Length: 328
Length: 307
Image (cartoon, rainbow over all chains, first blue to last red; front, side, top):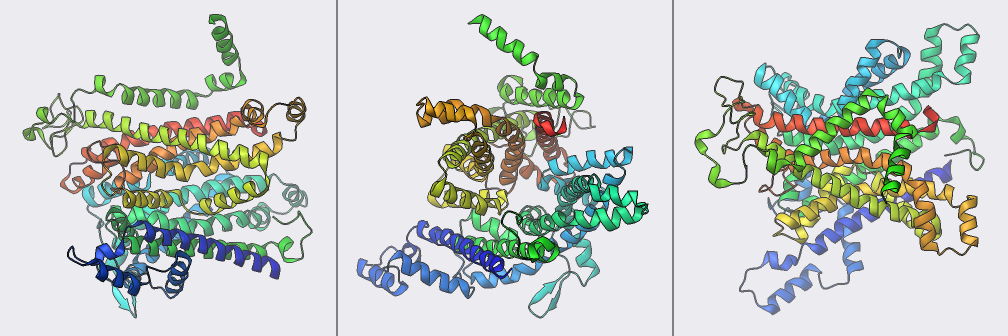
């Protein structure tokens, strides 16, 4: 178990180093930073002096070590577009994105898992088949189109919900939250639904497939043969074992929710990290891109790690020292 | 020559796949819709009632017209016009052309790259295999759209003046970069199975050179799953392209794809001019859905477990 954790940790560090290398090479390609900083009439000697002061004359590995050191403390320099500290920019925008993603994730699980169980248990009935057909539409629709259609229906035609911005926010320490005001929730409704719809469709298809697989297995047949009531068999035996892969996918999807929020945030002019990143790509603003890249990678690596460790907790086969080949 | 073609056609017609196809109404319908979309896109210059890129024919007096069946609509502009007086139907046909072009070429490129990498990785093994697969692991753990965005951003950095052709190249490369991994994974797995089979061993003993062995003996036997994956990926690539264009980092605005059209139209949604964005959106969904359904059908039809 300990070696399992250590191996995973080592892999995580390796991935982060690789991503850091990628972010670092972004800076290498952007051209000459000195050229950005000085005017046309700066002499060659002055340029060279600045170069030495900035440490740009040192070898690439040394510069990389420098970069990693600063990145570890959250220092990614100054945004080329806005002229402010990247870490401050991101810290401002982080709450908006996290709140959006978390509400969407809760929404997706609260709807997706029960729907999937329902579709599996009643798979011969027309209502379950209809749900499946609708879910296929759900995974085929691009996120931004779902957002546009929701805006057209609920903002333009019905006029029920606002279509852009976060609305009224409350400052709790450094965290600005929209979850404490009714206006904030009204603004959150459409973006969160947009983000959740794809995940609902995905989760329910997954839960249904897994559940059907488990319902066919011997121990479920045996449980039925013992005369256990359907309720116990379905929820005590089948659902429990279905939840393992569902747990994995949900965890991994949390990361892609944050990634997909790039699109949702653009559609709804949501002031989160996604819009920050898109503006950075369009500009192009390297420090912001590099910081976002590292942050997202960190989120993914941590989620992967947590899911792996949860697996070890949930699956007893991984807890005891597994014989070779029995573990994943 | 002719008899060979006839024989091939007969083999295709009498295959299990064809049998499965004609008995699946969903597959037939999806194929028809997909072919119609493809035809509409390819034949856009001849089908489109107007040339949306010919500035001389544009008339600002014709801008913001609703579809023909609404009160202010005109029969010449069947699906209405946008803010510059461009015919939506024509723009849509030309846009689908760009979308399909980008989608199909990125899939073609990633199949080429992914299949080669997978074959080599699976057959050669060792360090090459280990390195390639770790790269795949890392890439698969990030959502493709983010990777594409990033590659696109880097492309913009490298070629700040990227216009037209270069912007297309960057976009296609960005999509390819995210897609090839799946083919590499699939082909590697299949190659690992195939390489120990008797026919491969026999060919090796007969002295067939390694490259020829990969290309003529193993490749045809691992292409089944690639075909399924490629079909599904065409839909994904078209959606990914539309998403990038919608975010404003896709194709150059002078040659709008469906995604660009949707983005432009998005600004007019609140003015009640829904047709500028929703018709290109519907076209996008139609293409993506039909390709996805075809892919789903192909996967089930080729999967012996489900028979």
